[in-house]
Image 1 (spheres, rainbow, N blue to C red):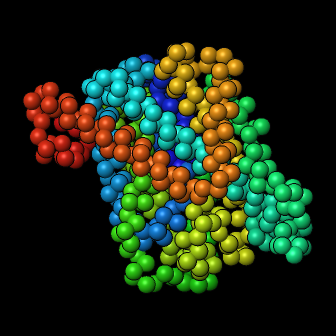
Image 2: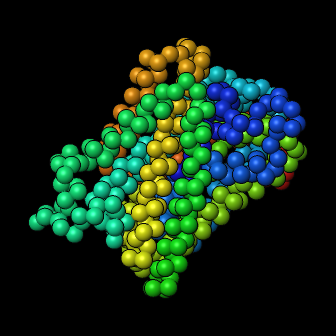
Image 3: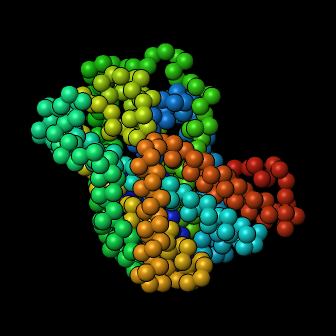
Length: 442
């Protein structure tokens, strides 16, 4: 998600809005107000665990879990390297609270590069916001239409009509799908219109609990399935599908996308000389979470149904799949956790997109007044609602925005900045450009 993260967008705003994820990361503060290595690692990890977490089972199925694990290692390694390059070359900008990845690009390539970086980063955030909206719609649908034995809250389930429609869904009429999609907006849009992000960050604190609940559910589901059905998907051809590697690359490009945020996070480090090590540690922890969830669910899929991982339901997240009966109470809790997570993250993402845009053009400030803010929030909400109503699978949304964001912000900009620095210094070479620096860039 980026997990279905409470702070996925908070840090992604960059310093332009002077967002301080936990209140302690701020430039120019005294040593006593700075963040230690553990806090830095946790913040980076917490930020990167984004909306892609729940679609990991489907992505690992599409590429084969062995192939997808290899791709995840490659992308995680490249993203760690390029994030390190950004951190190294932005050392001169760290004292400026307003500096971000776009400013680093502008320093070497002009305003056009800054706008390309800004537009791409905003596109990733819009994609993440749309994914949050789709998660909320899907979870609401399941909670309303399913009974407790299927992980829902409809206690009248089991009395479906001839068309298979349950009484709870029937009560909403033919516009039920619209209700699921639009019902979250009266809560989320007003929150996105707040003048500051302080309240949103506090509300988003519940995301840590939600995230841990989702992870615990996934691993418990795998454990129960292992006990009941053993290892599934034993055909070696199912482990390795190189023709689908590009899908995994796109998803993981978004999963490890923090390049427009970590300058903001790490400028408040109490021990800046450990930044590169802390960065690598955080990326490793994120990789462990993604890879373990993808592999576990593919070896021990819910109900032992390996083929279900390739279904449209799985493309909308692991909790959309039928689970063993023993998991029903936990499934209800997991779905509620996803709903809470989506509702708290969605306005944060809208807030950040708006603040970035209004700070960069015309108004030159993140909150120019309630009218332009409301109109812009409604525009973004219309975009996400349209995609949600269209029924586009979440994994498809994340794949495309991840590919675009990864290509520009993860792979291109850091490498080009690195090349430009050495070109100006007369030390440029292809070998140097491709070199992976441990602990920093030279």
